[in-house]
Length: 341
Image 1 (cartoon, rainbow, N blue to C red):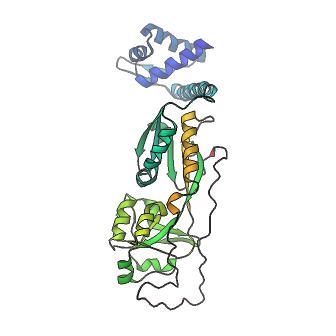
Image 2 (image 1 turned 120 degrees about the vertical axis):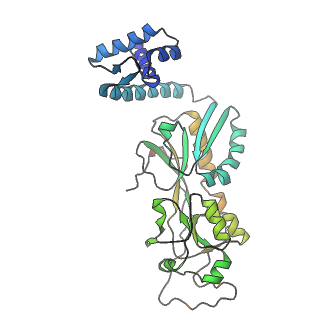
Image 3 (image 1 turned 45 degrees about the vertical axis):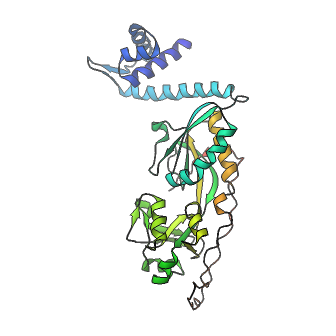
């Protein structure tokens, strides 16, 4: 069995390097030894795994399938060995964490100071990306993601709700008036993301199509433009909380808005390493009761006038307040990611 595992490890390294000689150098073996391991595998399987040429090696179709199986088996062995010694061990090494840019700057980076004090043997490599990243291909241990997940290869745990608000600057509302229900957004300049999915704003009653003069790939840019009076924005409270407290933005109550879930997302593993479990537990405890929502000004109700504004009531209309939402449990098991249909 040990010889078989060694042969599998050798084959994986040959596939990664594209040559017997490079694999031999990486493994500290002779080139003839590497060649023999691969030949033994091919003989046992009764199938050719590699196309050999004078320039490089390429995988056959059988080789590609066998490589996937080898990588999975070897990863499970590594994880089992790590898990066996992890119960009493302090997490060590480097944890590669990927988070959205604005959430990472405003919430995650400040929190990591406390995490570092609790785990001095663990270093964090923080990646900031608003684009989708492939955790498996790019080698990330963990990601924090806001919204619904589509990659069924991943394992996710819901940590907290990210509540959404429709906001605008007082100067914009004074100049353009303000919407009092979602249907009136069509008459306003609605600033959005440069993502295909951002053409509509979700409310409990459905999604409303919006248009505007500015689209940006970063939420901070949209907040800054809205605070300068350009238009309305639809953003999570962690991004607009400071502007709401300063009064440079005002939140509008257009009816209940569904929250977006904050997930911890990791490659599909049955036993996450101790360093991943430590950070997930820390983030769950830190953000389960979102600190950015504390003492947040309430949205401006449909019947609450702006300074100097007189509003007639909307006949026959009663909009419910944003319902309270219990945060996701922080002590539940890891579960497969939900797939957004």
